Image 1 (spheres, each protein chain N blue to C red):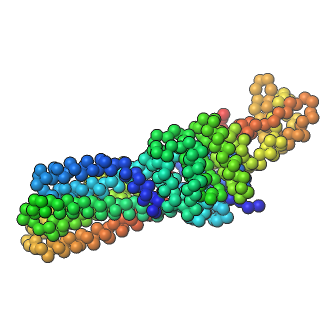
Image 2 (image 1 turned 60 degrees about the vertical axis):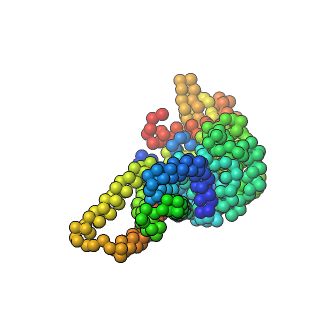
Image 3 (image 1 turned 90 degrees about the horizontal axis):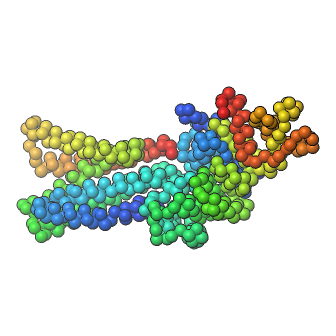
Length: 212
Length: 291
């Protein structure tokens, strides 16, 4: 798996410059808007979307077919991509937190504490993780190009469900308290982790049956 | 005799094409040339051997292990080269070295880099700038650099110019000098196979038509040229296939030596192309196809 991960990182090395430019433009834009949350949220999604780049390179080169002739199992192929996604996710959160921290120290939090910033960042991150957990088996099943089109749809559905949930809670007269928000975030975190693991198992199952 | 690859009753069905009970054994220490037309089933057979497709039936043993292509310890000893290089475009030679060092337990970095130098592969350039020949050489360098015992090559020399092909065939011959090294080479370039193979395996429309050692083919098979009337007197059991035109009849015969002394027959040595063409034609005739 280590070899496959190094191969993905070598591939992603090619867009390092482009990533730094995106980072700078995004930071400048957020400073202009005086909103650090946009920066962190965009950074996480940008980093996670790099998995598309890595998988596209493999798909273009038909690398998986070749990889399976090496001492690599089908499970390794899937495991590597999920590990890479988690690495990208962690990097996204780290850069996002760093950005928020710098913003907070230089411009103040605008009445919102750093903890609240972090909580909102983690809840959005969980949502992203769930969206990618849904998407990954589609990528393994349909290929990168077709599956990419589904990402927007998955986000629309996810935000629709959350928005619908909030409206429903309000209409039912349930007061949105700190405890309720904390509970929802905790449930979201559990769901994201469980969904991610389930997604991995589904992807392994897809790749085990795949023919090259 | 030990076999590096043993395939028994391999069956795989696709809409419009099927591998039908393909059986053959590749002796260790030999080069087996796998020939057939485009679409005959060569790549499908190789994919089944490498566990890239799921077979519908049959048994495959690799380096003595049943379904060996699913086992890491077996794959450690197998080098595979396809008709294209499957390395992502952004890699460089040192990247490939690093990646393979992490994948193969027995990766031989020095050997790999020396092959790269011998093949004049630029270290600092990305794979995307390589020519087709260079990409194939990179794949071959990887395939040979992990204490490989079995080389499986699927149309690895197709699309390369004769100079590069010749160079690559020389390397396969060097590789086979070790007595436990084996090469299984599929190609539709029969001259390549004729040059290096010890055994010839012929497949047509998913069925194995012939598996013989090259010396038998060379000395036992012959092309007889004669009139149609004279052709009818040749023993049917000797005839592998025939081709007629208005002037003469050409017959591919087995045990050509028996006919060598007949005054009214011209017996020439059969090339691998002749054997391929006549055998395939006979099979088509038996299937009731045209052509």
